[in-house]
Image (cartoon, rainbow over all chains, first blue to last red; front, side, top):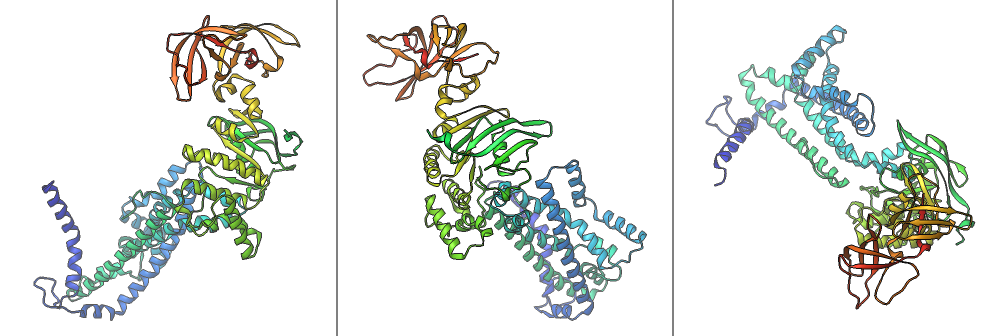
Amino acid sequence: MKGGGFRIYALAYLLFLYAPIILLPLFAFNEGTVIAFPLTGFSTKWFVQAANQPTLWQAVKNSLIIAGSASVLSTVLGIFAARASTRYQFPGKAGLMGLIMLPLVLPEIIVAVSLLVVLLGLGINLTIFTVILGHVLICTPFTIAILSSAFQSLDRSLEEAAYDLGETAVSTFRLIILPLVMPGIISSLLISFTISLDEFIIAFFLAGTEPTLPIYIFSQFRFPQAVPVIMALGTVLVACSIVLLATAEYFRRRGLARSGAKDTGGFL
Amino acid sequence: MTAAAKPTMIEFRDVHKYYGDYHALRGISATIRAGEFFSLLGPSGCGKTTLLRTIAGFEEISSGVVLIDGKDTKGVPANKRPTNMVFQSYAIFPHLTVAQNVGFGLRRANLSKEETTRRVAEALEMVGLRGYGARAAHALSGGQRQRVALARALILKPKVLLLDEPLSALDKKMREQMQVELIKLQRQVGITFILVTHDQEEALVMSDRIAVMFEGEIAQLADPETLYRRPTSRKVADFIGTMNFLPARILSETAQGIEVEAQGLGRMLLDPTQAPGAASGTGVTVGFRPETATILFEGQKADREAMGTIEEVVYYGDMTYYDIRLDGTEAPIRLSMRNVFGRAVLEIGARARVAWSPGALVLFR
């Protein structure tokens, strides 16, 4: 066998990465309250219990509002930035783009604490709105990265051709640019939605009295009897995340195929 | 030729274009006639594409005037100009079908659906793509994309069609075929075609007139034959085909002719039309094309003969190129000879008698 050692390493690595996630549905469908082997029997009661908790539903609602708003806002900002950075040359462009992309590598706890200090200093109440603000900040670098590659693969002469054939700048954007970058926009929406949905630190600091789903989950861990319910909830969340990301990647690839560009690797 | 009687379609008056400090167009003045197949020829970076884009309205000129059909184009945006362009990359909209691409320009014309369909079919027919309307644009071959781009630009019946190196992405065979098709198409529609190319052969084959550009200036504007036979500068002569240069000096000059003595060729009297260029101050030379001189074989005689030694032989099948150093010269000249059946190709080191004629010479000074 070729590279036997590396093969074992790779397997162990994957196991370490995914085994805990596989345990999630395992215990979610387990009869017993205690998270331990052996399993005691198949049951969907934890899912039913989860569905019957009003505080959980409130948290889900908050999270959906936040993720929805943050993904739309950050994608819109991303479109502007990506368009500007791929089409125009202006002084200080590289530095400016670097600053915008910085939250990508900045520790989230730093971002969260600084935002909290500033918001409190300004006398702004902590609500869903402040969480949206924080999430837009951390999502925008991702949307710019995705959308820049979409705008980059656009041949400039496509715009000029539409313009040359009598269209205005606005109708050219609508008829040519938008359809061609649409897969990128959808992919950007889905990825920023996912990021916002399971973001914990910023939400924890800025949510005030309106907890998001991750905060709710964290708070429930104090009660042992609630743990199987959380397992059930976690299972649902993992399933949703996989579906969202797979959809995003599908649209990204379709966009490349459509414009005839070469795949240079995406997020997945 | 009745070209001179045609009205002017485009006029450049002292057009300058700066990109920051870079002086891309340096005082272009020229006229392009209606219905003409006009080429802008030059090496990359000479400003030919910039000049084309000033006609389309994609580049704003820094100073000067560009008139299209007698109207000043200042402040007129690209979408309001009576010109359409075929882009180097063809710029076919990849998310639309062939028919949607071709009919794109008709959106603004408010035609009925039937009329649009009819005109799209007509345009596709014209470029030889009948029945391709429903195809997805990204599934086309290079040659087909080229045709779609042509149909899309011509469907609006522009006054001027601008072609930015449209054949450069095609392979040699396809390119030669498209050259002929473009000429035919231009004759058929009668629209002024302006072609940008760096391929001198392409320009010679296709154009009614050619403007040769170097470094933002038009070096010479003439019909292909004049350009080839009477280039006004060594630079133009070198860019278009091959030309041999021999150092010379002017002995006397009158209205009847210029008496010249050239290295390796001796004394001769040239007609004033054989010195079409202005003095450049870089020294006097005479030039001639490889095919205007021939090697004489035994028994052949000519009015003007020069002796030389063959230094290099390049065999091309139908032609052989000989590099011959004429006695009394430093650098070899190149001759091209058609290979005649039964006559042997000469060998390196052989002595050769070269027949030349003063009428084929051009004087540069």
